[in-house]
Image (cartoon, rainbow, N blue to C red; front, side, top):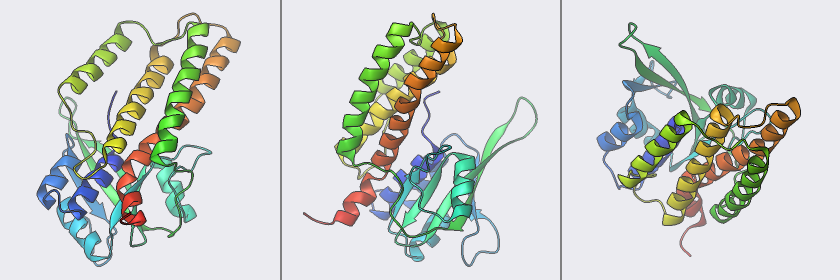
Amino acid sequence: MLSEPRSGLLAAWGNALLAGFVSPDDAALAIVGPDAVHRVAGLPGEPGPVGLTLALGRLRALGVSGYRVALPAPGHPLGLSGPPDFNARALEAEEAVVASGAPYGLVPEVSAVGPDGDLHVEVLWHCLPVREAPPADVPSLGEAERELAEALRDATEVLSRLDVAASGPVAEAALDAYRARAERGREVLAPGYPPRAVRVLELAQRVGLLVALAREHGHGGAVSASEMAARGEALRPVERVSRRAQVAAYNAYVEELERGPR
């Protein structure tokens, strides 16, 4: 249940590669993770899909200096800047990567292939033109941190009053798995990111997990239509704040790069 968006992995490790903190092969391995293979289609000058290592090098040669993340949802084009075709594909995928320094964006198409019992995931990233403009609705790290604390406090109060906090064996197992990963010192983001970005992303992921658990397993006493509607109203802004904070954390590298030395 706790998993980083593929766009976040590509942006974070792509930025680490551009900054010289990791090798191309190491960046590609971190981005692919447990998936079988990632390829990139639509790169200028390439007649067909190419491997991720080659694609990252080609994008750098095309002028890409950094990567941002977009995590849009219906009615909330978070991190997008257009054009409409790219925004529509990103909204369908619920995520995208937008390059800085060159007008390109990447949208993942995920498919499971293989026979039953031996399925593996393949990802085809579609490289598409984007509009060079400020991304929509992305807060600063400081704003994101404040919003997370306020939203979590408000939602916890409402959910507790409705007796719909996440509970039960499935929810407990998910929380235990999260704690185990945290205790193992899992790597958050990639080399080169500021500590505050790591802190914001960790908190946003915890908040996102609690929202998912409350939606999927936290029925509690909220059995009437009005109580279910109240739960949805309580969770909606928290989920939105969590997505905004994740985008702010992933985009911190580019934001610092564009601010320049202080």
